[in-house]
Length: 112
Image (spheres, rainbow, N blue to C red):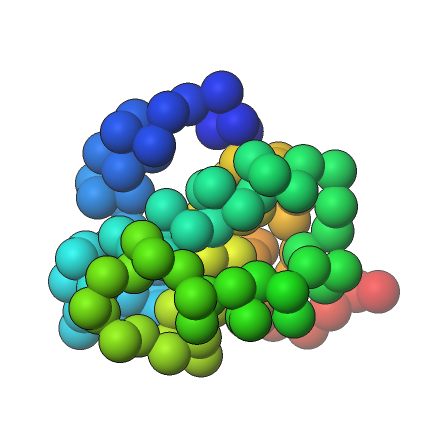
């Protein structure tokens, strides 16, 4: 969990690790930097809340987020990165994030 890390520390971590995320295929880090920062800041601000409870607020906030600069990225194009950073800060996870991190989770049949 990275909740005590500064954005500079997180920025460095994400730059070194973003390429392992399936949503990052064919894209460069600069496309995701604002989304990771937004997820980092939002996760720290909403600590203790669940992603599903805040996603609609974050979607609305993304359109007004000054940190995205002139990137013009839509919510749908950055949502996975925001959620990834959110989960890193809050220590929460959900099925989607686990699938992002463990690409072989969908292989084989479920035993549930």
